[in-house]
Length: 475
Ligand SMILES: Nc1ncnc2c1ncn2[C@@H]1O[C@H](COP(=O)(O)OP(=O)(O)OP(=O)(O)O)[C@@H](O)[C@H]1O
Image (cartoon, rainbow, N blue to C red; front, side, top):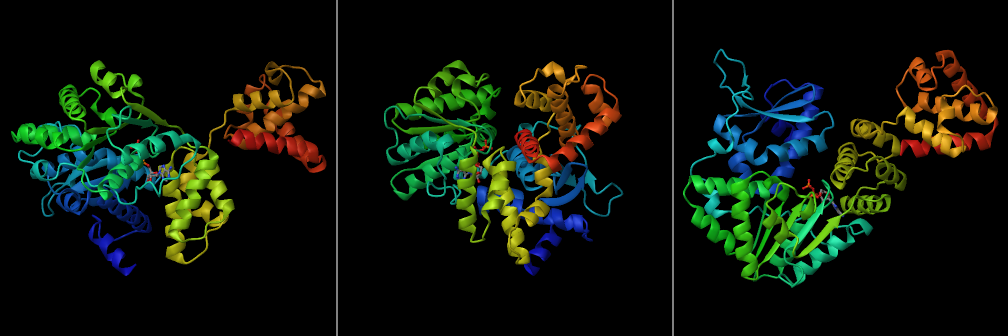
């Protein structure tokens, strides 16, 4: 720990660390470790090592770079990734701002904001980009293997296709392999797994890069007048994998270049693997001829995770970490964090780091404490209309009776339950709730809330009904 504390200190703009700064430093350290793994030591040392953590203001974290050139380059190449990593790592951060750090001694403020005078990133990209020639592709993350990929209903087809390509690249019907699905569902993981598997078998050359990187590398090659080398290099690989193809939408020249590379490779019997957030036919904004070609091989989608898959993923990741995570905690997380695997994994990693750091077991209570910010962000916002609909369905009454003047118990009791749940599950005030129930007075709502609470203590079946409704509404 002493080691990492001094390491953080060196990377924080202010020298005195408040507890909030220390928390940010821990987040930043994890993000840097992750980036290092993703981009490799050399690229990290060249471009990212010099970033210094700046202040968090509202939901915007500032990262400082020593020169304008570096700032623009980092923004162009890694801006989105930094933003994604921060959002997953720290729920308080929604935006990342990259700024130039002024040298101390001048009268100017410590940082120079430059959003308004934003030059196009590409326009300021470095003239000769040495790695365009030497290191075109991004390194593969050694953790993203087929073995570490948890298979379930939502991803079994994509997994099977990926395995097939890794075993027999360029098989008819599987070229190109087009993987698509929402954010953080495992597309990149599967692509890296294909690459690692192929490299393990030797004899093939594999190039993996994000579409965004493809674009920057292409533009850098134009600037350094090395497009021929760029083209030749890409056309010499056995397997080309391009991640997040949606980034090419609207980038006509780069699309054109990709289209030609694509054709040259497929015609030469090489394998292409592409990922995107939508299917080829839904990627409007891509040139038609490219879309058509992308859809010509195997198109496999990764669906949103199910509860069962989330549990299996948590089990596998917890087991790999060596930290005991109770089933109850996994069920709680799988229930609460449904958006994507990246967030689920981030939450689990935080719990594990916490348990290791303090030598305490993971419990439901510690989970709620350690993850309070993430859990808050995932709290479902239930509306009064949803509550009214569910309650009306449950007792088989008309939705309009939620606001009608009818006082028969068969109608009045469900209405009271809906008011009770509206008070429990939303942040609406009593008068606001009253208004949604046919302009009733707030005292009527107050009466309904206490009546339902009272009945729940005396009538077990009724209490069960209300609890069931609450669970359904909380999602
Ligand atoms: N089925 C799975 N088994 C194990 N880990 C998974 C699975 N699905 C996703 N992950 C993990 O979730 C994280 C996010 O996955 P990945 O980066 O592959 O998502 P993605 O679909 O490429 O997202 P994006 O659209 O943001 O590029 C990774 O750490 C990955 O290892």
